Image 1 (cartoon, rainbow, N blue to C red):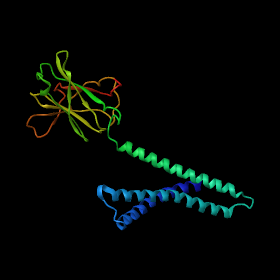
Image 2 (cartoon, rainbow, N blue to C red; image 1 turned 120 degrees about the vertical axis):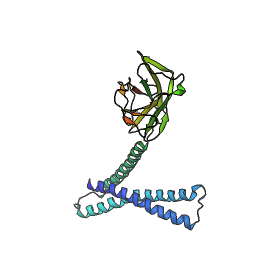
Image 3 (cartoon, rainbow, N blue to C red; image 1 turned 180 degrees about the vertical axis):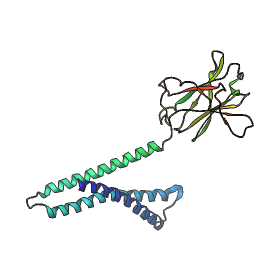
Image 4 (tube, rainbow, N blue to C red; image 1 turned 180 degrees about the horizontal axis):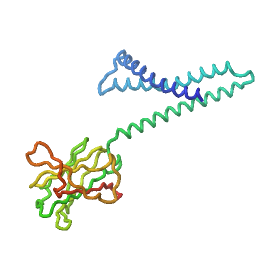
Length: 257
């Protein structure tokens, strides 16, 4: 078992050294043969030589480690040991080591791509939508058209302006409401939604959503504004809780509603 693990480590080390050596060899050959760099041709050439070097190192590393280990074990083997069985075991360990290294490389590549991909929805799926409703105190005058409502969503990745539904004005008893949605294109650790009517300050809400939210069957409870940005103020102030402006929201994926 120890010899097998050493073969795996030797393959990883050999692949790394082979890539580096292949890169330098490729650079030298590109200079020696004056490979054109038009449209990146010299870069592709160097990359190809580096890959070949990595593959050579991947094969040579485990092979050298296993052959050296077998010779060392052969000197310690009993006189009645079967040579063919030892060769078969070495060949099996070599194939197994290569398979493990390839699997580790493929798994690492997939994990890196998954962690680095900040998009929501996937390549063959529409991004989810954040549906929201914002209600105001009784007597608040809403604008005549949706163009008079300014709703924004800020994350560490982007800033977006929201769309309102066709039936964007609604009522909850005597309290007027507006309703709309945002496309959520990115995973984000923070999402801040703000709304401003023509008359009045901008109300700011810190949404309580995970980095990659899933489908939500229903709207959240109503949450009061977290901050208020008065016209002409240097910075927003913390909301007092008496503003009477509240939000609720849900995340909807296409085909799951």
